[in-house]
Length: 235
Image (tube, rainbow, N blue to C red; front, side):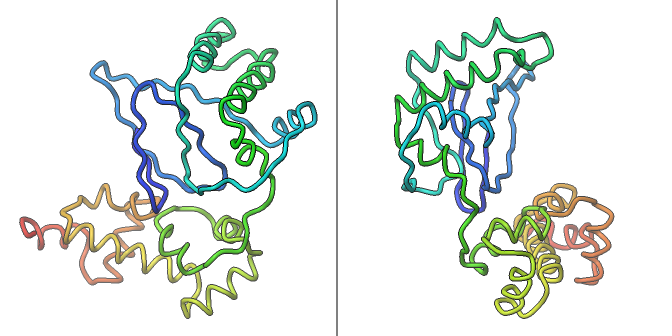
């Protein structure tokens, strides 16, 4: 599985273990093996569970030393045996039996923190995102199709301050800027990178191909397909 968070690319090979951090925007591409299979085990450590754990096992929490969206975990005997130990608790629906869920999650967290105590800074950081550079963040993450409320939260702002700061930084509204920025990126990918319109519209943050095509033609006077044909074969 490959992933991209607007800044870094990540590659997860069969057998890898990694922690996907909260409040990070990430796009995934999954690849099946020769048997057309893609198998994964996902264990969610949600905030209510983590707070209960912290009550039982108090820990000093600081600031983690990097902001990577994925933190890879080195395999050892404890991790490997833990994964194998999950099999008897599945109830046949791809979900672990609820009666054992918190017990097994606590076991995993104990293992991870024993191996790397600094991970406490990741797991037990319950604060909201701090106010960050809006222009830098939006130019890096405009391809992600999330709500304005979510963009505001992730940049450490209320919706009203997000709109106000956005107008100061870009001289327009978030909706207008996102639409134009995504269309310009789509034009570049189609005309210069020979990408297909049917793939590009999702890559740049549109949900619907027909809406993308309509907006694209309104912006550039040509449909995505016409631009693709015009530049076909050029480097």
